[in-house]
Image 1 (spheres, rainbow, N blue to C red):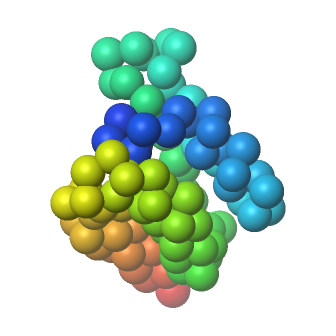
Image 2 (image 1 turned 60 degrees about the vertical axis):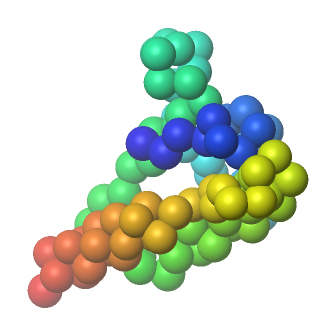
Length: 98
């Protein structure tokens, strides 16, 4: 789950921009679980490649970074910790294939 509250964009807006890049967005949780704000649930499996995960991270960063910096220059949309989480998940998936 990734929370986009700090970006100033809704999950719907982010998913539309991802789709324009031929990437399916995450499940919008804002209606079913309003306590999580503008959050999306992403699922990766053993079929998800490391490249696909990196493409998602890169796209999310590009989509959200400009708006987040306009709101507050010290904010980064996808934090380094979140990027490490993506990479760790990717490594676990890759190792599971062996």
